[in-house]
Amino acid sequence: MITALSQIGIGVTDIESATTEMTRLLGRDPALGEEDAVFQLANMRLALSMPEGGEGLSGIAFEVDDIERAERSAERRALSPQPSVAFAEDDASGAIREGRYVDLDVAATFGVPVKLVHYSKNQSPPSRQTAESAIIGLDHVVIRTTHPNRAAALYGARLGLDMRLDRTEPKWGSRLMFFRCGDLIVEIVYDLKDEPSDAPDRLWGLSWRVVDADAAQARLKQSGFNVSDVRSGRKPGTRVFTVRDGTLGVPTLIVEPSTARA
Image 1 (cartoon, rainbow, N blue to C red):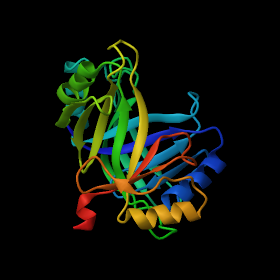
Image 2: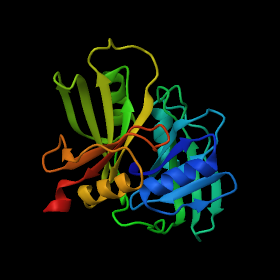
Image 3: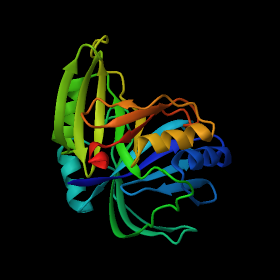
Image 4: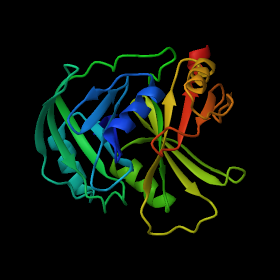
């Protein structure tokens, strides 16, 4: 049903200043609308908008190969989809996107707004790179759950993502579940100190992909960001660093995949 992660949204209160911050972080120019800004990366797009819900990560959209089949499957799997809606949009960059989308019931997805989208036309060129060592794509999106078995059933059995890892690690204080989605990972995190509960899950953090962690860290540090030193990642061969500010309140990690240094 799901073939890729299409879009992640961030809600902001000031679209102009938020766009400036994200342009500095990503090293790319956005496509600007009247009330939003969109950054097209290699494997997804990031959309800034001013929703009524306020600031923070506001929703996730998964691409599907057949919207009617996806809608039927979502209904059978108790995801309570809304009727599909047609859309057609373009922007100042020349991007043209047409298709249909389905919103899933946020109660059925335990607090995380999820959309399924099928594109009949998707001509979105990557956002223009404005700096060396720019972000090239998303590596992980992190969702924090209050009930790991419930989350495993949602993202694995009901949404049909491929679980690649389910690891409980006391020294990290977490149970981690990795679900492959296209060429990136949906990461589910559960804090072991908490008792499982029916409280909602939440979109929490983003891990951006770069070719060279040292060069990216130097660029962001020179641009005034508060960044950590580059260190080895938990996945063997990866190199990472943390961006501590200027991320619109979203916990942010920069990742150099192991294949980038082969």
